[in-house]
Length: 180
Image 1 (cartoon, rainbow, N blue to C red):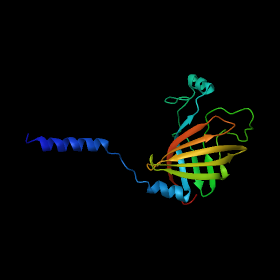
Image 2: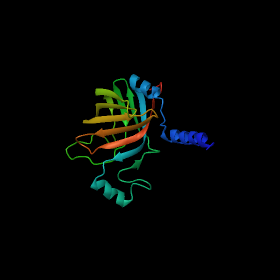
Image 3: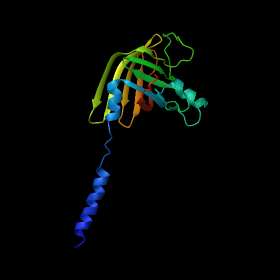
């Protein structure tokens, strides 16, 4: 019975280490969101799964390790920049376009260049992330944009349009370089 207090301390230390949650420093992401001066580079595109994309996956054209709902963007130039009330971007698009929209560009990517409308930010204190929503225009097409930005600088950007199937980009957010 002499070892009982030591045993109790060891058990308590074990369970407290298992139950502890890592608290991230949210000051960096707060600064980026507050000043509206950041860039996002995505590593993964997650298009909405459709029959057309499934057929494309079955053809083998997507490459090793990719699927119709998870496409690696590593090595592909892409960006989304927020600078005050302006946005610029080039995001490769994988998905289906509706027949009622003109293409307006040669590459089919999503290229924002201009002002943002209805910009709104919200901090989710319980889940520890910022949600940013706004509308932006690429060629003649309006997109509803939703970003979730986390203290570990991970980003999820979801784009929805009346003319295309939705797509989500997963990447990293960082400060916009001074020369931008």
